[in-house]
Image (tube, rainbow, N blue to C red; front, side, top):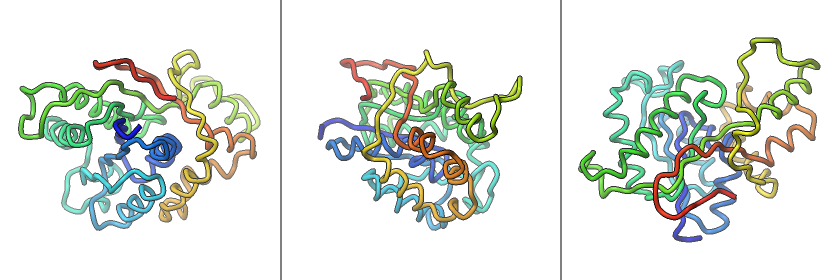
Amino acid sequence: MADFGLLCVHAHPDDEAVWTGGTLARYADEGARTAVVTCTWAEGTVRAGELERSLAVLGAGEPRLLGYADARKPESAPGRPRFLDVPLEEAIGRLVAHIRDVRPDVVLTYDGYGSYGHPDHVHAHRLTLAAVEAAGYDQLYPEAGEPWRPRALYLATIPRSVVVSHWRAVFGDDPPAGQALPGVPDDQIGARLDVAAWAERKWAAMHAHESEVGRGASMTLLTSLPEPARAQLLGNEWYRRVSYTGGAEVALG
């Protein structure tokens, strides 16, 4: 699989491990070229260093940082604009350059809800869709390298049935009516990857983000779940397939 390339586009350091860590580790072990673009946090910050360690665990190369500021944490990129405020043309051009450099067969990012509604995630989703399309046109961003059109685009998500069952496991009841939940209806899942054999690597990559471990966040949710539910989340990764962009058919799995 040495000629197969996989590129993930994420909003923040740690998302690469939480949402696509098993996929990255599995494909790296199978000989694929893997890489991650992270839209926020700048070089020299604590979380950029944690990202470097996480990517080493996952076999996903060196950090590729756009270096913009997290919507909620100006210290993430001192003196730089928020990711949400950057002119779209600028951000697309910079991501196109990474796509043309990596030349991936498959690009992964979040679903349209940003997996759980974080504005940086939603924006990363929209940016990725635009950049994947733009990267294939020689008329667009000629300074960013030779055109490249990925063969497929997948969106990291969770089946709604899994979300509801884990809600019950944590809270002992169904979600309240009208509650905005992560994920998509089960019939919209286009690929489920069994990454149980790489779950320990994924967990280790998550723990490389020590500042987030101390803060709680995803770690708190996972450790609060019963063991079967935690194993299900660590051992499976789900995707919607939303774009077939040319070339021979390619599928995750």
